[in-house]
Image 1 (cartoon, each protein chain N blue to C red):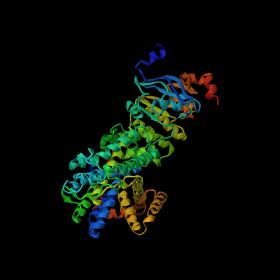
Image 2: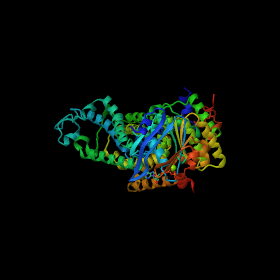
Image 3: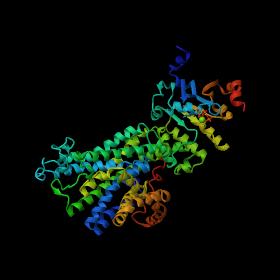
Image 4: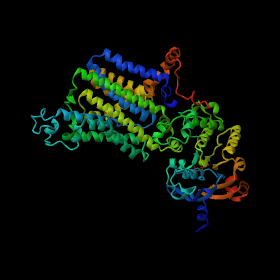
Length: 254
Length: 383
Ligand SMILES: Nc1ncnc2c1ncn2[C@@H]1O[C@H](COP(=O)(O)OP(=O)(O)OP(=O)(O)O)[C@@H](O)[C@H]1O
Ligand SMILES: [Mg+2]
């Protein structure tokens, strides 16, 4: 038994990715990738454009089907599950471009993600009780949107849409939260507020963040994984990775 | 239980809309039209069942079906089969070479009632079949398509193909279906003549009552969380999956509801027109129904009723004088509506009339306290 499989059977890992490969018509966007995320760990994935970072998240959350390999979340194989089953298992995902429900209000966006009444009849007879209302308001407050809770989501600024999407994940209370470039396209103040927000919400769950901003990365990361051409180039603490000559060459150098 | 109170289900504009429609259909039209014209309105209203279903499927869920005629037709045929058997009692058909079977079977040298027809001797079975046959078919189509994530134009084309297959089947199997003429010469319902003026009035009012049942169901759906999930799916289907929902199930559900509504409409058509034929099953009627819905406003369940009514009145007026112009007019109407008024008549009302009406309602004693929106201004206060 190899070291990797020995690690995978260790139930302490929240997420165990092993030999994960996906090829798009022969092009391997993710190539034999393995990594492990601990309980309450904040893992940051960095790497040049097109390295395959977003694709890794797509594979974990079931949006793209893996060609080979396995993804185990708390020892549960995810590669055979549908997207909604993976969400229900406790994996939440924020997309690179804000993706919220523009035709609904902030309140309705959050309420829709509240984990109750998820089948057809549950949704039809879903009751907006005080518990739901309080939870939605609490979440809106956490992502600084309480003032705009009645507004239609398409009226929010780009940065606030990002927050709303983060709120939509929080209300699901996932054990593993995956964020794809959460501060991209934000103003400096919004960036600071988001960093602050992330620090609060990452306290009691495992998080995978994709980010380009190295200062931001150094601030939040427990471990950093550097990807290049679908493979892992380096792994370790932010300090260690920053000094790795290979990383400097392909990513940090320019 | 506050969530199910009427003021959460309907805004005051909704209440006003329902009341006005009820007044028009139950008071104004019956008092001002003769029985023949009223019967015609009843026929137009049978299409409104389809358009209300289309508001749910297409307007809310983004599922464009160009095959609603299938469900309308199956509902209509299920009832027509029952009525035809009743009209084909051995006494009534004693001159046939095989008495006791429908006349068109006799003409096609069929000597025994096909097994598929047997259960339609029972009124109870026939009523169930009106609802269940189309709904189960919709479920099967929906399951096969939506679980495979077929959507958009592909889905529309497949529904169109299904409606032409059913038409071909009905026309081809003349001996079993009555062929291109359909099932005609329907006379009585449980021994009671359906051809009297009195019967016409009864059917008209039954039709309006059933339409309101469908409207309330549709209203309930649009105001539920399921309604909001449909809206969310329409724009961001993928994202809805990542909110933990199995998107296909919601599409199947709403497609089935649309099919069931259409089936009731088809049965009401059979009752009021005393026949059912393949010309209400195929591609052309299915597309016409989408046009009625677009004209009324695909996001408004009440608008859909007006769409079905007004386009058909227009068709009758135009068709009586220039029948050859009708298809042209229909095409123009559709293009015009899509380009100029994407939200149809309901959109025009919302934009130009609704603000004035709202100001008026602020003063009306009955409506003043009624919330002007079902948004959660009251209930979302923290406690
Ligand atoms: N569905 C797909 N079909 C074909 N190629 C794809 C698909 N998805 C991703 N790719 C390719 O895989 C590679 C990795 O893309 P990915 O989006 O994962 O990169 P990334 O690391 O997230 O980059 P960025 O920093 O720009 O967001 C790219 O070359 C992309 O073109
Ligand atoms: Mg990316």
